[in-house]
Image 1 (cartoon, one colour):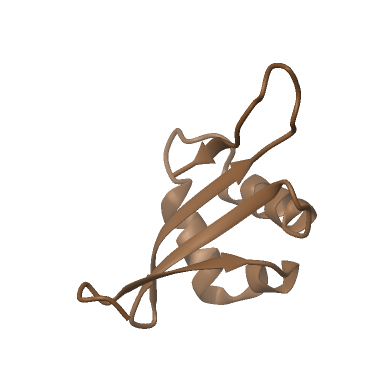
Image 2 (cartoon, helix red, strand yellow):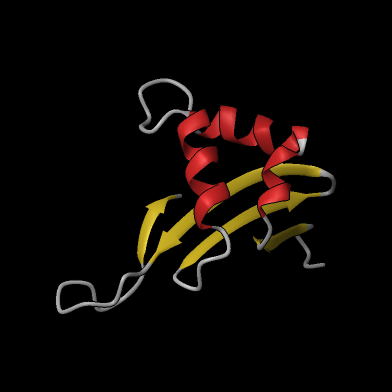
Length: 87
């Protein structure tokens, strides 16, 4: 672990989104006017987490989830690189 104690993990299984800590992270990340809402974001992540073109990353400090990043890439003439959907 680095000096900051922060580590980043790529989520690869839909079951991870059932953890209470993960659901709490999504509630914090998607509160207020952020779209989609937490439940919509969790549903999307469960569906796409195993796709090669999707990356869902969680930052943790100790046992607490403190950050979330979601990227997606559908290669085409219009999308030459992954796009950050949420950070």
